[in-house]
Length: 398
Figure 1 (spheres, rainbow, N blue to C red):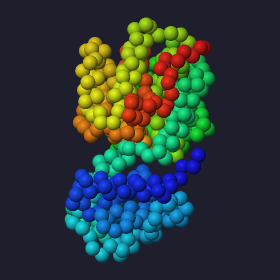
Figure 2 (figure 1 turned 90 degrees about the vertical axis):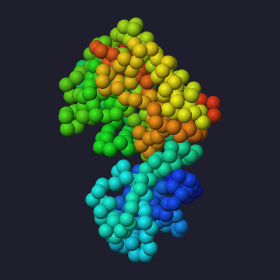
Figure 3 (figure 1 turned 90 degrees about the horizontal axis):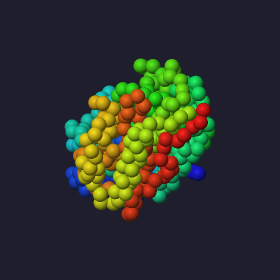
Figure 4 (figure 1 turned 135 degrees about the horizontal axis):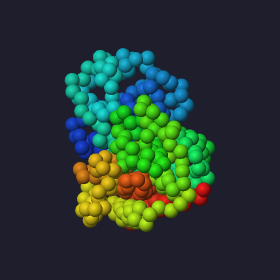
């Protein structure tokens, strides 16, 4: 499958961004993009570069390195070479009073280097407008997402049980899972937009390790390799009979991610009350999926679902103890954490072909994190799952 972004796709993305800016920021004159993922979205290549988007005039990608690779990879119509911002400035003798930037991600030092040659008095954020354009996926993007979902489902639902052997360390299981995902077609990285978030694969835990505290904004936990690298798996924890295995990992194809959580029970069964809590999470996921239709308001979905839950169930729902998150799902795409978010404050209506991961989960003392996560496409009837149908708690014999 060719993941090269076609020229018509790039033209559509740029037009939708300009239209969105015209609607939401009617006085805008200039947007400049530096972030790798947004550069890729709008140009089809990920270089050390600057995308200059004037309201009146043609957008141009100014590339420091590698110009040759940008030319080879991208069908963007205007690609220019620059040694520094000074070179690009020569093409723009007149500057507006305001520039719209990715204020969530641009380092101050980079902005200072830019503003030395582009002394524009005022800056405004373009982050939300870019994110809302990216939130609605094209048929080209959906094809890549569906391929990622196929890999995700096959590996987590069919292949993982063969990797679980008594005595295996968490870190070794995680390494084997990563290798398997890549061999099946996963693009090898899990990208997040949240500042300072590093993630190679996802969160993996045997037993109560899936409840371990972490800075990551998700319901589950992970011990990781060491305090400096709280990723992959614990070097000390080994799989034993009766363990609940929690696997919350991203997959991706051609730059586009899906998100999925699957649970396994190794060597014996869990108590009936634990199974019931897990099944309740699955029911919540299915109910949420039925609400993913155009026009639905994410904040209202969140409010209605949370208000219908009993107080005793809400305890440790979407986390553990005081480490609970305040969402039920999140957009996915070039990042694993995109908008829309099924949470309070997200009030823009859903649109067809938005892609959302739903992840109702619950921490259980002495057991670990139960629940599920799958990725869904918003359609006219309900959310369409693209990451498989297994409800989890897959039994794995010793």
